[in-house]
Length: 370
Image 1 (cartoon, helix red, strand yellow):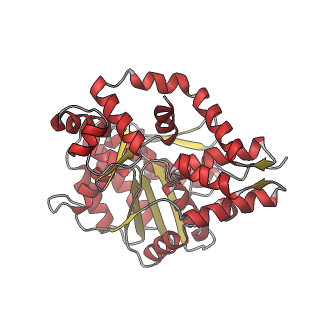
Image 2 (cartoon, rainbow, N blue to C red):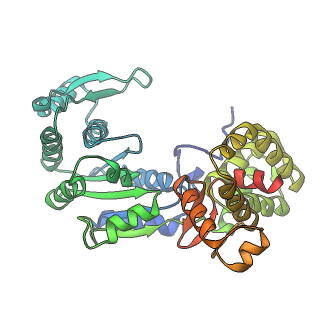
Image 3 (tube, one colour):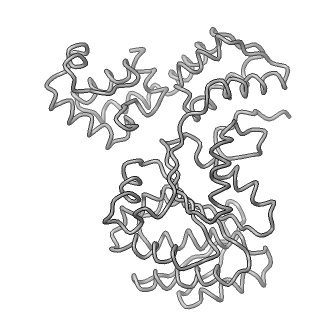
């Protein structure tokens, strides 16, 4: 069975990873020279794939131990500690004695070892009862890392989530460990640009000026087109230039939407022209019709009108300008400004340094087609 080369989730190998050469080199250089990095992109732009791609290179070097974990689903510092412990556990040799040795170091916080019923991987549960025990668990974890002769590279995805924890001083506590442990460097990545930028650029915040910043943009169009054509060609398929231009138009070259659309095209057709792209887009929009319709129930009339106007324009720099308001029959500038703030908060639109666009590119097309 031949695998579809257009991955929608996860990372497989460099063969299925498009470009990002400069970004990968920059990230590798930061790791090699022990500079902490903050990696910011809009959702589903490929930052996790980039991290995994770079980790794949470093896993070939016995001196480095890559550790990755995502904290989007955590609601408190205790859950952060448990997710971190389990990520480090995956680096421990898969022997009973090694697991017990790691567990013994966490005995003070009543750690217990079980197995994930879905993956069969070992999993640690921490019985943390107060905030002091959270810090104790991190003490034990960082001491475990500090005593290793190898260099740890720890990537914490959706790092802005720590700002939502009810515990105080979370940033300050983590910053102290970042400064203290010498054989570890960090990649703090996330998709909430405003929150992360504030965390690392405001003088009053503990992480102020503590990392190198990298903002991940869309992949170069020519590079992406070459990648797509190459994979079609390798499988005895063909995609023409007009189809590629159509893909770029529908997806704005946003990584997830390009990959998803190409995945569907690759699975359905031997030869892809603009006709097949449009046909597939219609299918995707029809499949998601109930979901998109339900989104509208979350919006006020003013919010929907503003969202539709942004979808029609694709990119909007000044949504309160007289020209924009008049062209789309919107209300007062203050009402539109309020709607934009709400739409950003609900993650319907993305603010990229003042340039507004609809976050979900297929949803944007559905709105335009109504």
